[in-house]
Length: 87
Length: 228
Image (cartoon, rainbow over all chains, first blue to last red; front, side, top):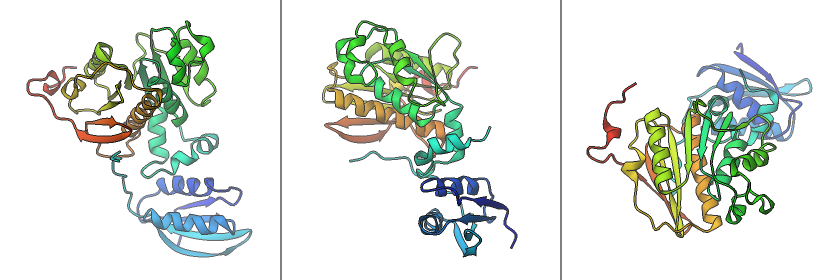
């Protein structure tokens, strides 16, 4: 599988790890795949979890030099409902 | 122009909000918001808009700072008697280096308006925004609470949603809540992060917001086709 985009977030910490991943996913079309290089620990826990929560598919995660390689497939973009502000 | 690494870092927490992202942040960045009025409602609203990344904020306020304005975050007690607009500019200068804060002037051509005023000032500012065809939000403190009227493009106008109030200014904390709420509503319009946006009137009653859609009043000029 050839990724449509590649991102290296190994130098970054939360929340920039997921912020940069999210921005990279924004630039892809639905169904396209993003390869993410990330560090062990918090990024490996949070980035796949956040991606799944937003409707993207976590295709694989495997050890790579200096960290891990994650493949994400972009899901359907969802708009947030307008806040109701109701107490 | 894409968001720089510094901008991504600056807005990292905001970029994580549901529906937010690079494109909504960019919409906010290119917007020019005229903020009408000053004081305890406008102060938090101005601070919020600057921190959120509105590209250009146009401060439109002709009054001098009064003692009660010290509750509005931007006007320290030692600046009483000085023009509120210029004091606000100084206070906001350090809020966000990516935001430009200027005095509103003829020809500034805002893309949206936030009205933090009441009475005739609010009605006239809202009507100017409507005739200019730009989205606007009006925050009015009143008694123990107040209201925020949201007028995205095509929605019923402020006059359609208007209700007569008591004319009593709200306590500072309530005014601050109204200003922040109004700024948040305008940001939702500017960013496109929450679609579709409809006109609504949010009443703040003893700290509890209650939102209702606005409806066009029969015969109101806002229902007529816009002449450009």
